[in-house]
Image (cartoon, rainbow, N blue to C red; front, side, top):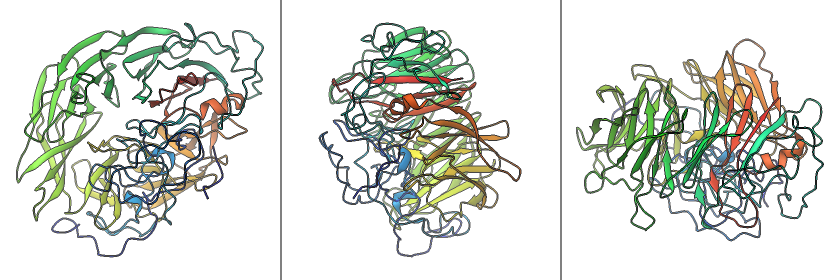
Length: 609
């Protein structure tokens, strides 16, 4: 919701030019977004969360400017670390990378022609994000905040709300609501205090629903979490179930009625990583900690069948060499291959059987694999080569997922780092240059040849999480692509924003579509020749799901779903919200539990007609 603003080098495709960085840019710090919502900033609380906003330099932040004045009540989290590889960057809107890596203007990148400079003036930074995500943290209102993406974590703030609760400033009162027919009443099962159980609806969330508004199909409250907070990563939608991980459990609810489909599945320690996508036959893998102590590692793997809820194979991720630790791991799925990335290597498994397929380790001139991204039949590996030497640089490779054989290699100019993949197929990468305080978005052909650079002079705001101990290549939401076009949301400095369709052949804008409300709009996916997008809720209206024709001369939005105004506040108060659209239903879940005892946190909510 909108709120008042707070008072490369050697070799390659051509080295970037030396020019002083300018303020702003695709990744520049932004003014704290409105409280709560899909991409809204959250109030700091306890454990740090992920930043929200435009992609700032994903994975490697610049020196953070003075933090914005905190909203009030909750205590401030520790200040983010100083710039350097792996540290979070200035928060951007929508929990994604701030406009331009590092919050600096785009400059001639490591590939192709020089893109347009700039991308706007720098904005006030948001509260320190949660480790693991580059953008700004989407969050709840000031009383309940969320963290970024799918992949990453955000600032943790305040407690969540139970059903229709107090307003964002904690001063509102719950209203008792009369029961309506079962057709209008969101489905929930279990007692309100049971982890993951929604309980009887004490306040009918569909009470007063207006003509044309969708229903709240069901909602579920979150399991208890420690006072320091806990991760609630990922969300997978199948034909029958909406599956969600939270703290030490995985829950599965019927997509239409919210009734438990199986589980919940419990784990001995907290879940620390999940596969962003599921396999074609609905398998996922979660990683959980080896213990509760300070020396515990994120090295325990467990496969889960989303159809049956059965736990399949399990494995322990071994450490690599001296500096190759499984303290944190990255999970990527490509076809039937699960790739587990450590800090300097990777191990591939058959996701169905758990059989080890191969290892990817040091190669060439001191090149160490550091990050992976998967999708369909593609597996992308990013390596860091010649660290500390005169020829230090990154390399991008595509691997055969089944064998690990290198299909092609693309060196990146010295000084530039690959920090995000906005798309794997087609391959679109987001690069940053910390020394030059510059960013670049480059696209590649199927065989790994440079295709184009984004040349649109605009401040973009996809939603990405923070990456401190890993790059988290697939840690962004709010960006989509098809074979020929990249769809990026612009920054919403005060009210509405736009989605810009960018040609992957030329890097230039094809068309723009403005948000139909005075709230930010973000791409969800491309399906059936149309772009599906989510519009955040406002104070007087629920969120919307809209479609935009991807081709043709008209690019106006068509409303697919209008969420009810009566639950707009709840919709806007999911920590680090994770959202999805499937079969005419809209799902929103939290990405981070605050651990607050002041109110019952929500885990997941579904809307539909």
